[in-house]
Image (cartoon, rainbow, N blue to C red):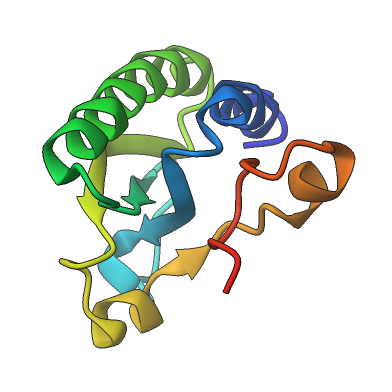
Length: 128
């Protein structure tokens, strides 16, 4: 993702969504360790987890909008790299993702963005 700068694009797209998206997970090949033939791309899904808060429907709509924009942008960036194929980018509520599912996904760390901004509603888990 670094070669195509898709990681940088993802970061930039998530910055204004700090209050909407609490976690970002990558699902690479559905968590399976697969032997790859030359030219066989990895299958990547991006999972955006949002806090439903007091208005779950509005939170879901906002997260779905972010997911749609990210899907288009990352798909365009990865089009130049045949080693990764984006399957989907979708949003799911914190209430709907199980701990067992989260364990098989790879969490994309957001701390670097959290530390960079002074806004308390920046990306990352909600304050306890």
